Length: 305
Length: 204
Image (tube, rainbow over all chains, first blue to last red; front, side, top):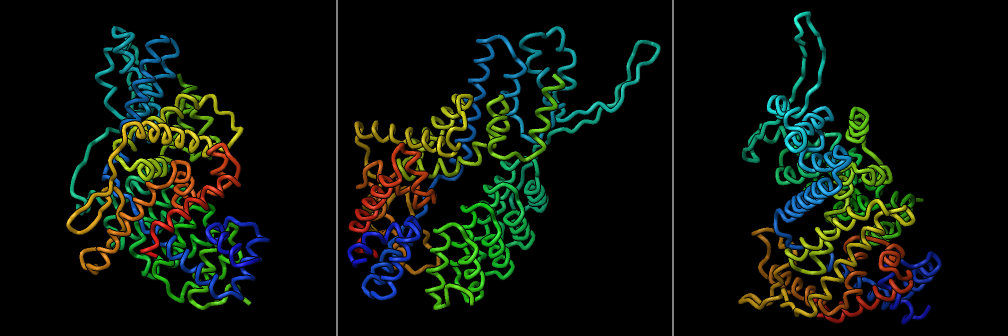
């Protein structure tokens, strides 16, 4: 390969977007050509500078967007129901679920359905129980005992929603947020709670929760969010150990890319072994190329022998 | 009603794979749809912000794109991956906004201040209050330089660059999203990086 050909390929090579054959030929050329190595270093400096950019997204923009979308979908679903006048329960599912936290079990949904549609369609039939049963967020009938006088005794377990507000440094608020991080059925709630907790990652208990999330959460979006919070603690030995594990074991390439970026922001020799493992096991060429660059930067060998 | 309730309970309790979520959403499960949205919406908002450089327009793109997905989800037949389809919708909505903007001739987001040019949308991490003031100035200038360099790219070049550099998508996937070949996406990325390097030569 000539220098001109190599220089032309450098951007694609840096992104890991050249074939294995071209990659080998470029590397063979680079090993013998100092000026092309310098060009590669200049290109990487340029790419790193671009990566430092962050968008000054207004705080709350994402939340506002999500709220807009929920409103719009609810409106569309409701108007569709009115137009079609059929299959109302189906539409109610769409309407209700967008307004109620996702963890609410079905029994409550059905009761709220009765309340909402009761007002619209059959007020005389359901109006009587709407006030009593529409409020609980979760109701479960445990037993039914009719008696001889014509009454019936029903045992109902109910969970009510309560709005709690307080400062982020309030231990009770923090405890609720930490419990939301473990909310199994709703990754959205986990992302939101981690987003809030990320600001308190200086606390050991929060950092531990973030480490747990990045290591074990089944949702890659949640793991990425937790990684975000751990960024500033990339120098902490426990965090580094967890991130090295993520880099080697996470099945999502996006998460692994973030992990290698965070790990290498505080580059030290302790990650040489991890990076060498990455070179052996990693399928993603971008991650391999990052690991290779870092190893070369640390003057460590690219493979283990 | 009980049967419907059972189905909903199952979707609430168990984390589903993406295909399962799509099928559930196609059957009207709003929880599944919301989970799909949340798996992608940060990336969608970031692309829209980077491309359009306006929070209001990014908010419009978010809304338009996900509503299109919502309205057309039943027609999705798994003949391409969901994320390819989603990003195709998002890129088309962004291109529409950029086309409309061409007519309106938007103002640049880079403004001159007493401390040099500053991009109002994009910033570089400044490393906190203790950071070196010279470094801060350099960062501000670099940030404005990147914004100006991005503005010189064609919408397609910019989209390819955003998707590859910031979203980490492979060029083959980007080609599929944009309805073109991997080779064409490669050429586009190459042109974009060339233009940006020329524009940012002073910084790197």
